[in-house]
Length: 338
Image (cartoon, rainbow, N blue to C red; front, side):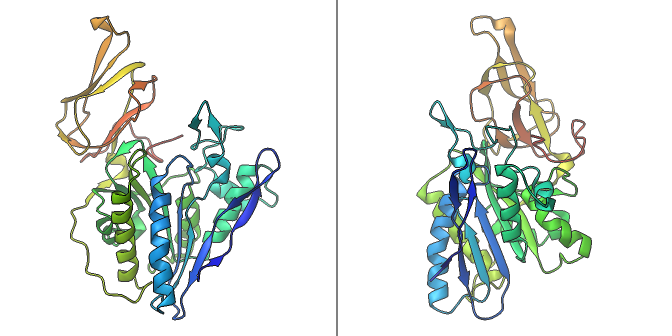
């Protein structure tokens, strides 16, 4: 039976809200694993994946097949999950401060006395995950292929994880410098040179609308199989045979909207687009043909993500593509600076 080790933080009104946490304990000294979803509270798919995975973990624990311990946080952000405006959840940013929920974890973790609700929540999440050998943070994009963010220290070992979850792309990064959860967790590992027997990654489980039993069952099964292969669960699992395209972070092309307007995509997710080929257009003033701007691919690559809404503001990210050379638009850090 999983231990309920949930904890509470206070929201902006000073009311306690709970972070549900469950720990499955093995008896054979295997790896310690931390799994979480919903740091961005509007990214729902991972919550359902972990909900289903917990049922498998409970069976493994009761049958004595769990060698390590697995801590599961299926809905990590009670601050964001309570933010609704005009019927729509505001799950990426803290409404009162504008703080991106997956930025600044490093600063919050280092504080003697965190002063805001977000800082307290971030510090407690880091403290919960810090003892783990494996840390996986489940997210989703707007509309996207399934893909993986992974630090170079964990590649090519991370290919097995990506393949198990049938992820099409793995984005390899070196420096983030924005205090994301993953970056904050692995910082001491990098300093101490202890990454060899550890693993951390951010898993992007398609788009925000891709919440279904079919996808969740597939992803939960893939994650369970990978945990077996990693030695967390005493159960045989054949390596997944799935092609994963590895791309340097700096080679990814992020195209921003040059004007506001109606967004019309001419290419689908996964399509290969040649350099200079059109893939979308933005119509600023319907009825005025001269207000239409066509968007072209900066270099040859595959369409990995698309903006979810079809009305876009100037400067928003329209799409991300894989690339084979450094992007002239990339200056370091993460793909999504905000």
